[in-house]
Length: 178
Image 1 (cartoon, rainbow, N blue to C red):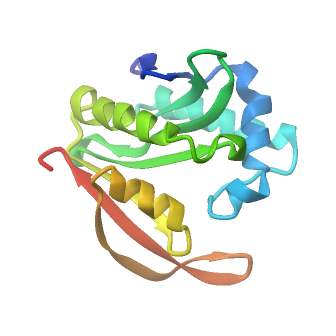
Image 2 (image 1 turned 135 degrees about the vertical axis):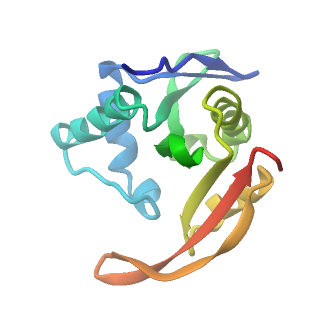
């Protein structure tokens, strides 16, 4: 049995569950060089992007996460994605992630969307800890997490291999008690 992912609203945005019609948008985002530069997943074809759509669905079905399509309230246009994954009920924690199509960067959309996702995690899913794992060179993402009162906990050196090179991952967290 899966939990229901609600539609969330902000002044300018609607965060809604993903639908099969979002495949083109997800492919556009996760094949864009500017987005995948620091993102752990990329797709070379629309067909392969179906894996991501299944992953969104599996997160909800298995109650291991909740991801939203982030859309303009005025136009309904898809602008990005954000959510919680790797949810562990026993430990009341999850990992937070997000991405935004480049044409919408610099408009403070994530500043509106992120608090809604965090509130859902803390209040509805009863999480105590939400963490973000960020590649060390991703300064924009680190700034966004700091603006949302995430605490930098440290750096895991040479944590992953990307493009045949080791990369460092920085860990940020926010607690329900913060």
